[in-house]
Image 1 (cartoon, rainbow, N blue to C red):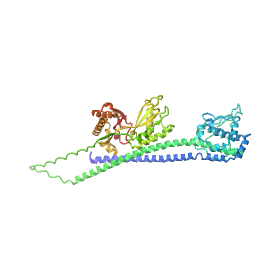
Image 2 (tube, rainbow, N blue to C red):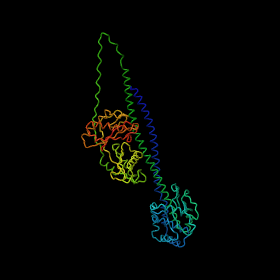
Image 3 (tube, one colour):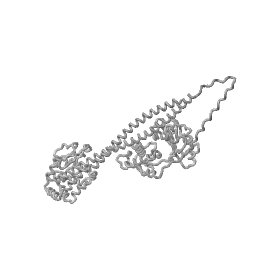
Image 4 (tube, one colour):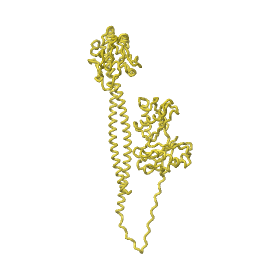
Length: 566
C-alpha cells in the first residue's frame, strides 16, 4: 500500500472514530443528566422522609399539653361516654398496645367486655408520656393494626358490617389491607380545625351496611377538647405510616435507577477514554504519514534530470551495494507469577456474598448483599485492571444441582452490568457442596503468570498504546506468531525453574470468532510448553470462549491465552 493510500485509510478511520466519539458524548451527557436527576430525586425523598414525622410530633406535643384536670374530666366521661369519645379511647388503647397483636391476623377488641382496659389506661401515670414517646417501629411488626384503625375508626378501606344476628356484639376484626391508594402521595396535614377525620380522596369508604360513622375531629373536640387532641395525634400517626410506606418504595425505585445510571455512566466514560486514546493515536499516525509523503514529494522535486546514457566504448559504473537491513531490536522477555497483596486478599475474604436457601438471585431483599456487592466492585476497580477474581459458587447439600453456578452468574452479571466491572477481570466456577461452605459466593484472587516485558505484535501496539505483551493470536487463527512463540518459550523457562507450579491455560476469543478457537489456542500453547520439557499433567487447557473480553473496542486484545496458577 502506498503512503498516499495509507494516509487516506487513516483519515477515513479518524472520521469514523470522531463519529463514534460524538455518539458516546451524547450518551454520556444523557447518563450524566440521569445521574443528576435521580440524585436530586433521591435527596428530595430522603428529606421528605426525614420530615415525615414532624406533623405527628407536633400533634403529640399538643397531647402533652393535656393537664391533670383535663385528664380527670376524661376519666369522668368514661363512666357513660358518648360514642365518639368511647371509640376515640378504644382506638388509642389499640395503638398503644399494638404489640399484643403481633403475629396475629386480626385485631379483636370487645367494646363491652374490654372497655375496662381503656379506663385503666387513663389511670396510668405514663399515659401521656407513652403518646409523646410513641415507638412507631412497633407498627412495622403489626401493620394490620394501623389498617384496622384507618378503616374502623376513620372510615377508610373495607369495613366489615355488624352482625345482624347479634347487633349488640361489638367484637370486631381487622379490615383487609388498604389498597394501592396508600402508596400515592396523600394525607394533608390535619389539625384541630379539621371538620372531618380525612386521610385522602383515593382511600374510599366501602359500601357496607350498619357501619358506624367515622370519627369527626370537630365532634370529638366539642365533647372533649383533650380527646380531640388525642384524635388528631392518631390521624397524624396513620398519615405518617402510610407516607413512610410510599416513601420507602419510591426510595427503593429511585436508588435502583440511580445505580443503573451511575453504572452506565462509568461504562460510557471508560469507552470514551478508550475511543479518545485510539483517535489520538490514529491522528499521530496520520501526521507521520503526511510528513513522510511531503518529504517524499520534496525529494522527488529536488532530483536532477537523468544523465545521458554512457557511450558504448566506456565501461558502465558499477551500482553501489544496498545498505544492510537494520538489525531488529531484541526485547528481553520477563515473566513472573503475579499475586495479590495481603490487604487485598483480606478485603476480598470479607466480601463473601451470602444467599438464602434455594435463592439464586442477588439483591432480592438481602441486606448483606446490598452492602457487600458494591464493596467487592470497588476493590476490583481500584486495582486498575491488575486484579483478577474467581467467583466460587457454593450450595448446601440439600439444594439442587446448579444452584452454585447460578449464584456465580448472578454475582457476575451484577458486577458487570450494574457496577461496570470489566468482564476480563472476573472468572466463575461452581463448587457444588463439596467444600461445605453453604449457600454463598466467595471471591478469590487469581495468580496469573504475567508478562512484564517482551515483544508486542504490531496489531496490538497499533490499537492501544497501553497494551502490554502477552500470548496474542491473529484473527480466526490458532497459529502462534513469532512474538507469541517467544513469550511462550520464556514462560516455559519459568515453569521449568518452578517445577511445583501447575497452571490452567485459558483460551479466549473475540465475539465474532468461533468459540472453538479458544480451545485450539490453549492447546497450541500447551504443545509449545510440552516441547520445552514441561509435563503435560501440569498444564490444564480450558476454553474460555468470548465470555471475558478485555476490550469492547479492540478485538485483537481478546484473542489471547492466559496462564493462571491452579
